[in-house]
Image 1: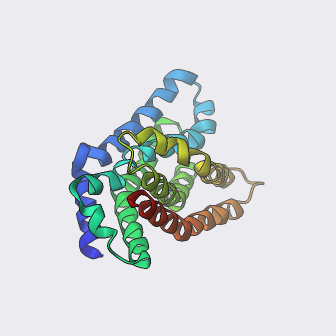
Image 2: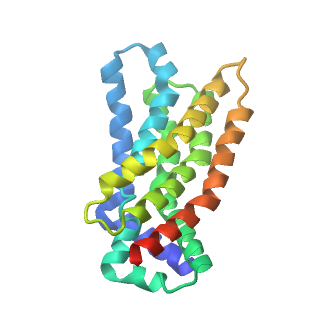
Length: 220
């Protein structure tokens, strides 16, 4: 499992530049917002948490279609499918974790710097970083199921986005709600943040199982 994690981490960092591409896309989305809404710093600070979350969500979708596609092209997927179902579920979980470390974690670490472009204070930027750390793994776990569904399709990238976007809306809602609650005194931060953590834990169980089942179906 350790070798598989390091292998996928290396591939995610090299093949197609998926990790850097997501980070650059995140930067581009956030950088364009001030040009669109104007120089109103108070407005930028108000919409900053939502825009950072939307940018991170869209950037997280990049490269998801390659999560299993590369293994299918070089024959590794056929070897992985020879495992029993529980072993395949664990393999999917390890591959998804490697994908998140390579593509999702850089977005989390970059969010405080990009928050400066949105005139966000330290409390708001810290809240966004914390909620992204808790919620972005759920996007990767949901995306693993979508990538497994589209693995047998020659151009499944768009299908992955279409399939998983409705499922990640709750992650976006509670991530943004918790971020705003951290800077709004009457609104408690903990309830939406705990729900966000619960969503991630739920998909940590359901996501790999659904992805493994989809991979089995695609191979039949």
